[in-house]
Length: 377
Ligand SMILES: *Cc1c(COP(=O)(O)O)cnc(C)c1O
Image (cartoon, rainbow, N blue to C red):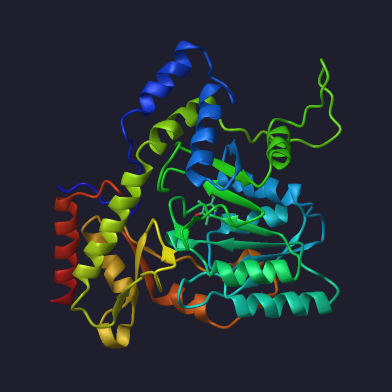
C-alpha cells in the first residue's frame, strides 16, 4: 500500500527542536520570549527593506490587525482580490466593513490593475471611497506590483499585501511582503515554511509594530493593574511556535529551491501533452517561490478535464485540488460588489493544484507520472 502524496505538507529542517528545547529549559512556554524576538529578527533580516515584524497566531489575525491599524471601520469598503483563499477577505467583515471584489488578470492570476482602477472610480463616485486594497500573491506568484502600487498611490489608498503564500518570492528583485503599507505572512502547516500555525504582520515602522503587539496581547495600558482603553485580542505567537519558525528560517532558501524543482518536474511531465499549461512567471521581473505548482487544462484540446485528472490522482492516493473558488462566487459574499470579467472564474473551472511539497520524493514523482500516463491511455 502506497502512502498518501500530499499537496503540501510540513517539512522540518532539523534545528526546530533545538529552539523548542531552549524554550523548555528556560521555561519560556508562553506567547512571548526569546524565540518570538529571534523569529521576528530572522524575518526582518530576510525581508530587508527596513521592516518591523510582529509574530502572531495566524496570517488571518495579521490581516485583521492590519485593517484595524489602518483605521478601517464599520460600513467602510475594502477592495480585495476575488481569486484567493477566504482568509484574505474574512477579516474585512471582522471590522464590520464590506468587501469589494476584483477579478484577476491572466498572467499572474492576481489582481487586475484595470479592474482595480475601475472599481476605485466607481465606488468613489458612489460616495464610498475604499479604505484599503488587499492584493494577494497566489501560489507564490507576485502580482503586477508596479501597476497596483501606482494605482494605490494615485488614489491615496493604503495597500495591504497578503503575502501568506509568497515568502521567498520577489518582484524586480524586491521581496514580496515589503511592498504594502502593511503585509501579511502565514506559517500554517501547508505553507512554504510552518510554525505549526502562525502568521506575521510586516510593518513599515516601529510604531505600527508596537501597535500590533499591543493589540495582539489584549491591549493592556501601561499600569500595574489590568487597565484597558481599547479592545484587545489574543493574537500573539507562542514562544514554542516561534522556535519552530527559527529552525524553518534556516532552511527557507532550500525550501524555495525544492518547490521550484517541482515546477520543473511538472513542466517536463506535461511538455508533450497538448491543452495543459503549467502556471509559470510571465517574465524576468517575477520570481515565484512556486509554493504550489498548478496547471490549466483545456478539456477540448487535452481530452480530459481537471476533474478527470483530480479523480485519477485520488484513486492512487495523490492529493490535488481545484484552484481557489473566487470570493464573488461564494455564497457568503453573494451581495458584495464585483469588478472584472471571468478570468478568475475560468481559472477555477479549469485549474488544478498539484503535489508541491518540498519533501516530495523521486518515488512519489514516479507515481504521479504513472497516474497521468494511466489517464492518458
Ligand atoms: C494561508 C493563507 C492565509 C491565512 O493564513 P493563516 O495563517 O492560515 O491564518 C491568508 N491568505 C492566503 C492567501 C493564504 O493562503
